[in-house]
Image 1: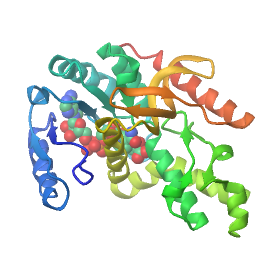
Image 2: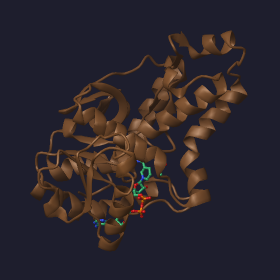
Image 3: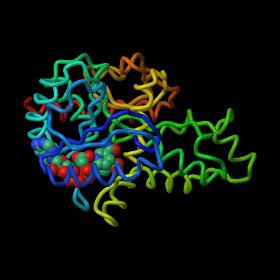
Length: 291
Ligand SMILES: NC(=O)C1=CN([C@@H]2O[C@H](COP(=O)(O)OP(=O)(O)OC[C@H]3O[C@@H](n4cnc5c(N)ncnc54)[C@H](O)[C@@H]3O)[C@@H](O)[C@H]2O)C=CC1
Ligand SMILES: CC(=O)C(=O)O
């Protein structure tokens, strides 16, 4: 957020106050190289007046652990944190990053009582970035020129929407043939694994993922702060392909009021089936959690 000037003030609140102070100071040292943002550590009362509150607290995956395995512990953390946040800033938009992010988004919606449009999970914004990066690298073009989405759960059941992916204005299949870099079954499988298993690989190597999610959250904050009406794959409670009241990702329009609309991309029958299964998995999991 500091590097893209997405906020005027950032307050870090953490149970570990020494860590919050240290992180705030470290981030503040980037301000002269980025944008003029006031960065401090604080407590809940210092969040008064915040337009957006990012919830990234709780536990993270250990090597080999799935995101869904974090649910019990992070649901417990959110029961106390969401109440405190609502006490001091009931009008903020809540942006959820903690995993399993779709379920934490749905739990936060229930705990806060806010309209679904104002409780946004980072969802598959990061998986979509990974997909665009890998496709761009294969095709030899900038990831920004690749338009393709990852849908459903931010997790093992996510769906890479190959059939609607485009490079510039061409389908990726046509583009890949035109540039002589075909997307063979093997290449598609490698890209699928690169997206779906990215977090596992990075956590194996360095314990956590930081930069991709940081950039993705800052992208969402910027869209809200500037009322951009950007199309982003974020998570939000809605009905997906017949699965009622479930948080998972499809492309949604994001601006100052949060999520204003959602769009289902054109999908193949296999992708439709996989997205329905992903939404159903999340729905089945969330119904086991007591809020
Ligand atoms: N949605 C996504 O794409 C991503 C999600 N994550 C998730 O974000 C979460 C945080 O990840 P990391 O920052 O790597 O973990 P971390 O362990 O470094 O930080 C979590 C922080 O939460 C704090 N905390 C714990 N309980 C708290 C409470 N009751 N009140 C206030 N603070 C509390 C801890 O003191 C700690 O500083 C994890 O659930 C992780 O899985 C991480 C990367 C990407
Ligand atoms: C940790 C996580 O959810 C990710 O990097 O995708």
